[in-house]
Length: 149
Image (cartoon, rainbow, N blue to C red; front, side):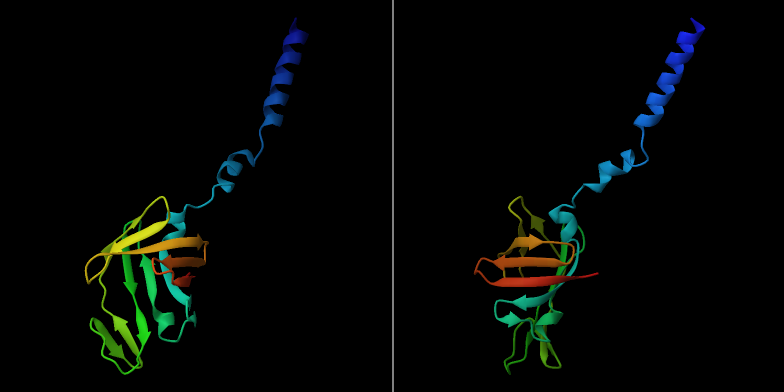
């Protein structure tokens, strides 16, 4: 009887020991992909627009998704010799004066936020990765942005 109990005890120890692995606990977290919202957080600069490569001025434009609801953005455009309301001329570039605003990201990957002239701006996320964000506007303009890491 003692031999059977010893055999059973040894078998249980061997089974218990061999069924556990150091990687078991880590595998549950390795396959979790970040959400669109998690990828979105950070400062994104224009690199390409519908008109081609972003100019030196345009490349200073950004969307900074500070958290899941706060957005700071700045549009910078080239000086074409015209005064632009709501922008400040610095060197050869016009810089916007936009404050931080609240934004929403819906299940269709639409980013919506209020704009200073009234109404709501909508940007559609076409694709997103850790370092590249592709957006379209309702006017079908395409913007490719890179994240400031």
